[in-house]
Length: 404
Image 1 (cartoon, rainbow, N blue to C red):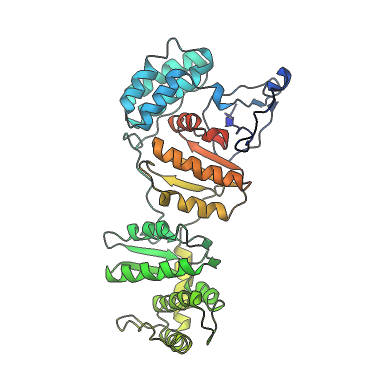
Image 2 (tube, rainbow, N blue to C red):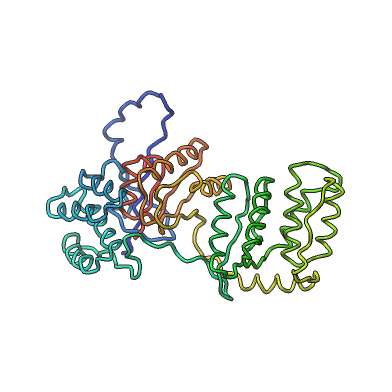
């Protein structure tokens, strides 16, 4: 029988300063068994199968033992070996309510520390203790701090960067930092503008400034989706309409034309910009190769065919690598994603560790989203991250679906 995911359901949000709700009748306190919809990912987590085949939902506050809390705290402080010692010493005598979660946390720690022999030994004991399949060792992932996945690659090779549907001022710098990082080492980066539907003036200005910086660094960028973005930008401007907030749209339009090699369109836009704002426009890069509209269309079709095939996964915002000593900028892209979605789905499957400060900052962000009425689901977090989120209260405002 395939394993079903364990859902840690959030507790109902309570307004600050409001009175504690009255105790519910004892009969209502019991978790009801219910069928859960099929999900696109598998998980390993403690669960209770009812006679009808459903899954009993359990409150996160009911499944953390003192040893689990202590191990989660050590983990957050990057003391993984201490966390292993705490949990390993707990296996033989831990309360039955916490047994499965304790073992699963230890499996994740052995994986992180690349302790394959101990992992396999624990797996043999696990099968005997729980009479179910044990977690499987994931080759190439145990390093103590999991490495983020490599950037998406176009079929023709090289990193691939896709701008999101909506570009707003908040979070754009963090997004552009990701693009700049991909250009390190002088590799050609394919930059896809094709998904963009909306651009704020502040975001357009930031893109223009960053492209100028990358040009000075001689970064190699191969654009795709440029013609579509150009049409959207043209719809935001008008000759002789001197609105300061529209100037970045003009400048970004000229950058796109420069990218595409459309010199005639660039020159026409430059003249209109100069007339509208009574200032000198950017100059055409004389070293750039000039192309016709037909050549651009042909190249656009080729690049579109070489773009990575989107993975068939549910839409989610993904963090990568350890989240430690984070600043507000770390979570700005998440807030941008949330602004485009009625429901917020966050993928932690590529996150190795979260520290206390970062978890607290994430909590603040998620509280803000909850106030906006947005349901939040966290998927794929490892057992130690899940335990930390329970300690910090994140599990009280977000549903958590744990990974295999």
